Structures are given as structure tokens and as C-alpha cells.
Length: 197
Image 1 (cartoon, rainbow, N blue to C red):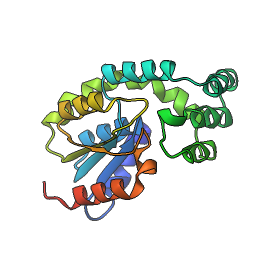
Image 2 (cartoon, rainbow, N blue to C red):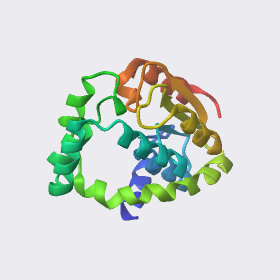
Image 3 (cartoon, rainbow, N blue to C red):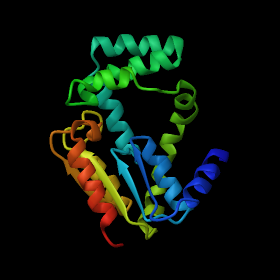
């Protein structure tokens, strides 16, 4: 709660148009913040708002789990530290990326096991944001990868429509659509930010 208030104050102190963006679970925080303060827009990328999305993610994870991913998951469950979390995420492979260099991106990324453990259970409560977002007049963009290995495009589109988002799906991109197609996604976001409400 304190962190949310601090973030809101910092954003409100910025001059000019204000947008928030969140990827995957980060989209929950962006959407929640957009409902608390007046913003010019909110962008969610591959965010599983609904229980249906989360169930699909769980099903795909189990069905497509490689041996390396299973080993990394066991190590994470045992150690629950930053290094084992980064290793676990890096082994998601095609569930997360079309570009194979995504593995190195996550393996060397700064992650917080403490934050992950403290916030992952909140995900199942975020479907309630959708009707509130739908009523809210803040302009909204939802970006998805057409080949997201975790979250099916059709289900994410349902979530986006339920939340009143403008939904766009990007070709040749998986869950980390901004890494698989950085220029395309950057262009979509820039166009969205330039649009009038």
C-alpha cells in the first residue's frame, strides 16, 4: 500500500502527459494505479487478468514443460533466492520467447524473489479490476503476442475487451512481445500515446 501511494505521488509530480505500462503481472500494478490517479493512458502487455487466463497459463506450463524447466523449478522451490528465480524464468523457453536470446535476457536480469513471493498470490484477485477498467475513461491499450506460449491470444483478447482496452496482437511474438518484436511494439505504444482520448 505504501509503495502504491509513493508511486502515485511520484507520477503526479511529473509534468506533462502521464502513462503507465506493465508487462504480464506488472500489468496488474499499472491497471490498479490507473484506477487510483488521473492518467493519460494505461498500457498492459500480455496481462492475465482473468481466472480463465491464469488457468490457461497453468495448463500450458504443465503441457510444455521441458526437463530443464522442471529442474530449474525444483531448484527454485528449494532455494527461493534471486539467482534460482532468474534461472527458472530463463528456462521457460518458447513459453516466453520466439527469439532464443530471451533465455540470456532473463538469466541475467535483476529479479526479486522476495517481491515475487509476496505478490504472486494477488494475481487470482485481479479479475475484479476488469469491470472497473471498463467504466473508467482513461484510454487503454492491451498488447499481446500472437504466438504467446503461456497465454492464448483469444483469451487475452477476452480479458482486454472486458476491461475496455483497445486490443492489438503482434505477429511473430510470444509472451515477451516487447523483446520478440521491439520496434513494432514501440511503434504501437507511440501511436497510442499520440492519440486523442
